[in-house]
Amino acid sequence: MIEVDKVSYAYSSGTVALKEVSLKIQRGEFVAIMGENGAGKTTLIKHLNGLFKPTKGSVTIDDVDTRERSVAELSRKVGLVFQNPDHQLFSETVEEEIAFGLVNFGYDPETVKRRTVWALNLLDLKRYRDSSPFMLSGGERKRVALASVLAWNPEYIVLDEPTIGQDQMQKDRLRELIIQLNTQGRTVIIVSHDIEFVADCAPRVVLMSQGGIIADGPASTILTDYGKVLAASLVRPQITQLFQSLSDLGLSGNIIDLYEAERLLVELIKGDKL
Amino acid sequence: MRAFEGLRFRKVSSPIHRLDPRAKFIGSFIVFSVAVLFTELMPLIALFLLQVPIILAAKVVKQWLESLRGALFLSGMIFVMNLFVGYALLYSAAMSFRFLTLVASFSWFFLTTSPDDLGLALERSRVPYELCFAFTTAVRFVPVLADEAQTIIDAQRSRGLELDRGDILKRIRNYIPILIPLIVNAIRRSLELAEAMESRAFGSEAERTSLHVLEMRTFDYVFIILAVVLLFVALYVRFFIPFQWII
Image (cartoon, rainbow over all chains, first blue to last red; front, side, top):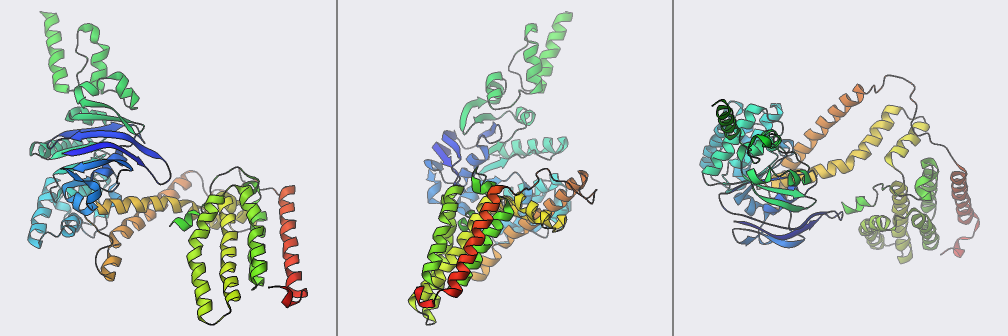
């Protein structure tokens, strides 16, 4: 379990990025952290593998205080994928890039090889195995970065803005992948601005604004709450907007799922005809 | 890294910040030259103290002290080295104090002069515009690169990289995963910057006009005259006052 207890964090410049944030994430959960730019989302997730240590309060991962462990030790458990892949790619080939973490963690060559191939397949990168990561497109580089962390199969997977630069097809694949990892028991935490993507995934949603958490609950409750969503500088998913503006017709106001929306609309239309 | 903070420009509203960069450069350069003229402690202390009013007027005391703190170690080294090779105590102290004075003069110049102003001043001094632009851009991107380096370090540490592990060779190699993304990004950014600038007609006219035009005002001339007076006083003291009168 990840337990963030009354964490405040101030940068050395004096900017306070987090104010008394408390958050509990159980094993196996799927959580999306959303909020405006500068709300403190990235600062919060950098606490989860010990890159940042709280100025006040504490962060514990499976009952271990992050202050008592090195970033390397924590990262083995909490895999953090940064927003911009260009901040980490450096190897000559995609394969070496993915093996980097595994080698750092001291896995034997056999395991490194096996896990690298596994990650290459997982993210559909096998044909780029021997290519230079710098020659790939933005979306592909992003997947290499993702694969390079998933390779050591961390129990907690934290993704900062995973959908940026991905086309719709890759987004769909990414969603399937995340849900697959989650059903296999991995805890997944994503930071995202992409409300349609989050609505499709339907995880637990934590809304942040100005360094604090302003709402926390299931996606269908949080993303359909006009006031709360606005307070985090977001807009409701399109399907929710449509359903809420048609509430006079008796349509439910907390719909975020397209299939459910379709079912309800069909019901409504058929009902009228009969 | 913190010592460099003491050289980074900060936007503050003060009479020193408003001075023409050329006036400031002359002032700073004269302090520099005078410091090099003397090897005695007293004049160097006087020169050092002379800069305090400038710092106070510019409201950058904290940053200035930060830069001096950064220089203190080197200054101490100079003191020890001079003593070590057999110079007198007073002379060694003067040498280390001379270094502090030089750093102090650099520090207030860079703390109060924005890279843009510096570029304009260069341009006015007939340095080709492309060179001025390259210079100001380089200065302006230093903090950006520093931020980026930190993010890259964080990203690689999240993949199990431990910078301070291993013997000296291993530690140097540990920096490869930091340096490559940093350099690749810097090159990529410079190419993008070049394209963005060309899209905005950079280099289309040989003669450029400026949005802000530098003009010397009365206060600038006063500042320069004071600096020149200082220079002459110093030259007079140096060459016409018998040596034993100066400690």
